[in-house]
Length: 236
Image (cartoon, rainbow, N blue to C red; front, side, top):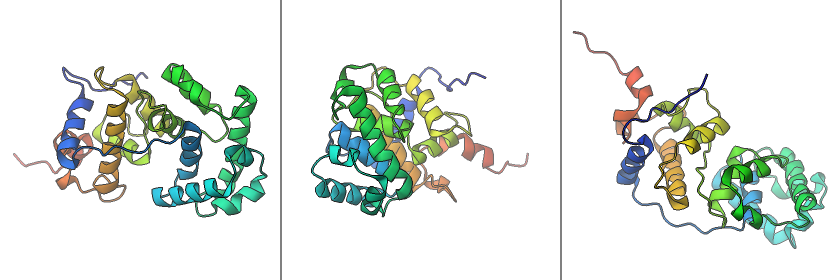
């Protein structure tokens, strides 16, 4: 069945964005990694706390001469270098494989060419790489120096979108990202999509947590379908 976001006269993402800005304030500017750097970091960060993923990324980059060296390494040699991240054994296989595939397909370990591609085509190209899913591809496209107009979705962001009723309750990250990106406000730039993701992510990590969300303190309480459905009904 086709799922349509509940858009009225105003795009609800605009209202949600405004409410989150009122609560959390402007999003600070971030340092943009090269797209290959971002690919490696995003692959390391899956199911891993940001500080652990960043420390592992920095240590790994310092240990290597370049990412081409990582592409040529045996997974058994990679795993000890990334042991602190979740699913290190799996990522030790995926990282060299993905980098090798870029070199085979492009002749060099470079993703700068994606800046000139339509977002959907760039995303599909990335997601054909071993170990690269929707979250990683959109992190590369939006959060790296490519800085394309695409909305990244991670676990926390996805949880908030489902609870708000923006997407189906069982939508995974890939489906949520696909639905939300179809309905971005026309006025939004790459900066806006990045800021929106950061704000939704923060809400999901601070208030709209997996267990026992702090609904009473949520700036989106009045627009949340899940909160409305779970609220006790008044007796007439």
